[in-house]
Length: 252
Ligand code: SF4
Image (cartoon, rainbow, N blue to C red; front, side, top):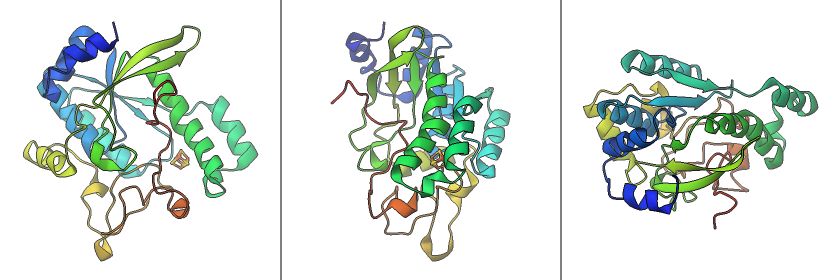
C-alpha cells in the first residue's frame, strides 16, 4: 500500500540502487524511471541495472526533442537491457491546439507556453503514470530554487479515469546529489550521456538541461540554471517549470 508507513520504511534505505530494488520487489513492473535524457536519469538507469532490477524506463517524447536526445535513447538501449517506452502527445489533443494557436504558440504568452507544455508533456506523462505505482524521477534539489524543496518521497494523487484518484509514489532517489556527484558517477561508470550536456560552447556558454529544441538554449557562466528555458520569459519569471513537477494540489 502507498502510504506514510511505506515511506517511513523506505526512508531507512539510503542508497539509490537498493532503494529502487526494494521498490521493484514491492511493485513488480509497476515502478518506472521517467527520464528526458538529463544526467540524473542516465545515472538512475545505470544504478537500477547494477541493482539487478532491470528497470522499466519511460520518456515523454514531445516530438520536439533534440536529435541528440533521440540518439542518447538509442545508446542507452544498446548499453542496457532496457527499452525506453515513449509517450507522445495524442493527436486528439495536439491537432486542435496547433490549429487554433499555431506551432509556435509558446512565443506568444506564458499561458500559451503552459498550454503547449500541458498538451505535449503533462498529458502524455499522465498516460505514463496510468501504468505505474512508483514514479522514479531525476529531480535534484540543486537544480533550481523551485526544486530546492524537492523531497525524496512524495505521494501524489493521480487522476485515472475511470478509476478516479489513486496514490502514486513519486521518488527522487538522487535528490541530495550535486551535479558534480552525478557527473563523477557517470564518468567512473562510463554511462552514455547526452552529447550536448558535455559540450563547452563559445563564451563559456553550456547546456544546463535539455528539453524541446526551440524552448531550450545554452546558459552563460553567471546565469541561473533554468535561464536557458523559454528565455524570452526571463524578465517575468526566473523559476520556470513545465508542469510535470509542480506540487500536487493537495500538498502545501
Ligand atoms: S518546452 Fe516548448 S515546445 Fe516543448 S512542450 Fe513546452 S512550450 Fe511546447
